[in-house]
Image (tube, rainbow, N blue to C red; front, side, top):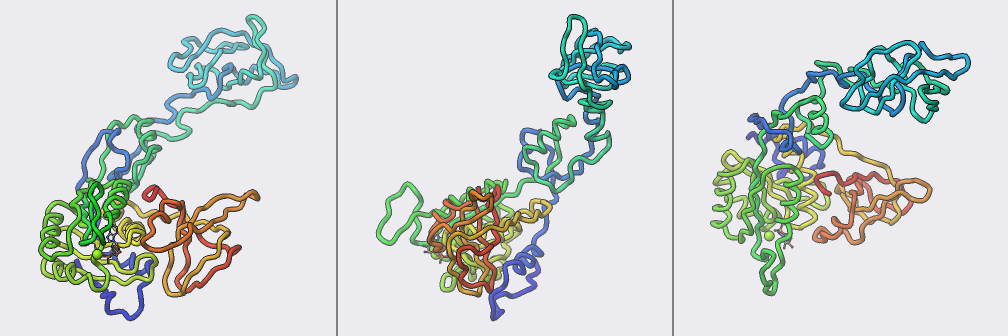
Length: 417
Ligand code: AMP
Ligand code: MG
């Protein structure tokens, strides 16, 4: 990996947008692909462009329950015409006969429009009178008919390589009869927490100890990011234990992700070991919560070191690691949704860093979007993340912001929900 910038040598903090661009330069997408059956394709990244091998819909069919008819038979002067009923067409069981002048066929939604008919009159605008059906106020020729190929014609591109397969894409693939797809191989991420004070859940806490929460939030984030994860537990602040954990992680994974041990004073072990075993760069970012972040390489694996404070580790994962993972997964980048909202609580902020305060976005009685900050914004207070449904994005040199101001919000997306 070529490390182009040395952010530590920079007197000022680096803007996160600039950092993301530099970080992304240091990773490449996986090239290995595999073919998976449709039910296993959810969340995977499509590795091929897909064209439809059929017309969609494959045949003219009715979009309503009603009567198939020939528009030419209708009296457009009186807007009322009686037609003779000669049969029925059901979804999956078409009408076998042919159209005759001044006749109609009872037709259900999804049934093929019988040969020779061109229009469907919805049931609610008809009256059945014995063998006859009175057609009232017909719409134009072709009404309520979904024409063969109107959505897609055979050979049209349907899905593009680099998209993430979601529920809609699974349905689209099934619609065109695809039973398996080529996707990029799933990334493996090995992660561990560092810190002598950390204990796993399920154990007793001695004085000065806390539960390791980051491993669980990271596990959740990695699951949502659709990567395979390997949990290597809590590693003590001990150089040899950390060295061993790095080696184990790097031998198994495409990315080694750690939390803690990258802030001033603590970084020494991580730095010393990665200087010996690989490469590391420390980044001081103009981002709050966050600021310290480390990236490097160990063996063939990319290394990302998140700060230990629980909110900082989630925010830096979301803002920095997730885009890195997306690129490595072969995903085409998607611009996050940003909205304007009216702030209902004042915000305290010192100019200097881009802040991602946690907020609750809602619509007020006038129909406007408004956002309230979720109380205290300490970088250790993880409840501020769980109460929130969006980030309130405050620019680097912005200061305190009064209630009533217009602010930019970034709703939590699938990785954070
Ligand atoms: P560090 O980045 O290691 O200096 O840790 C910063 C703060 O985050 C300290 O208060 C740590 O106790 C806390 N912390 C570090 N790792 C974790 C973790 N895995 N879970 C919860 N808190 C953590
Ligand atoms: Mg620590």
